[in-house]
Image 1 (tube, rainbow, N blue to C red):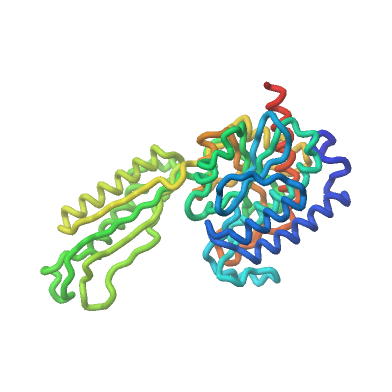
Image 2 (tube, rainbow, N blue to C red):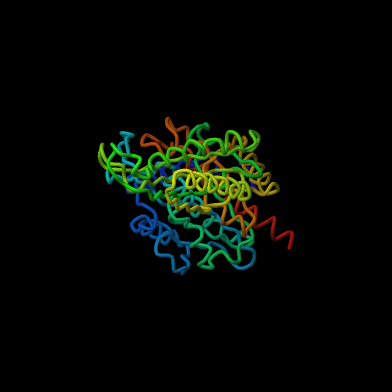
Length: 393
């Protein structure tokens, strides 16, 4: 870290840095052992609120039922930092001493994200009088389930924000390494549901039935060619069936079959094109099999698309702090941070946590040793962003 971006004597070997790391590790273990699902983050929100209020940080009245937005600084330019706070319906199998016991798990690093933000809040509050504007801290609910970013935006809490920055753990990068790239770094995400209405009957007399299972199997088989034969190999795309249901016994052809899944591509236009092709497949199978097929699809989140100038700014800031940097690891995962970027210039960057297993796995572990690094970079990004924007004005 240099003098301009870091508090006095705040280095990785300093007492202040070690104290921050120790405090954040304690908070992290509590949040990890008390995970809550999207829109049910009641205890998580209360804990965040208490920690911020004890630090003298102002909590804004947003009307959000869970999650919150806080503010540090005075008048003028506003930038935002965002983290997510919800967990996943996964039974933890890490054997950590602070492992969750309630059947849910922070298996995607959201406990790490929110704890890092609490650290950034502490650092920014200490330097509040020097901020050339204000920083809004977004502790967002329901990233994993119902696009909580949309609710935050609808609250109006970010209407005055000029730039926004968010972070996400990366399991396969070294601890504390910063990954940042420009352009599309997370995929546009769509979901689909297919319900086939056939005619049930005895399995011994399929000619008297309209077998929905055969129809569904034809759809699943034909759908695989949409990516392998109708999409350029230079355009990353994924089409996965993830849930299939049909029948309840061995000698009855069922009335209905159901399937759902997801499509991941680099942008909304290509997502819509693949959705349309899947719809045509369903229509063709409907005509062949004589069953009625209902097809529903929707866009869950657009692609996370990092502003190139701001991505370079984040990289440079990390390097000035003495942190090792590299490109973001490409992923077909989705992130509702993209909804913020549709309205606000922003960057979504990664930090390595060296997990033994990938995210959404019951043995995923985010190494808390990187917490103070993440907190320091978040606070520096916010402070330097305000300074840059104020000089432009």
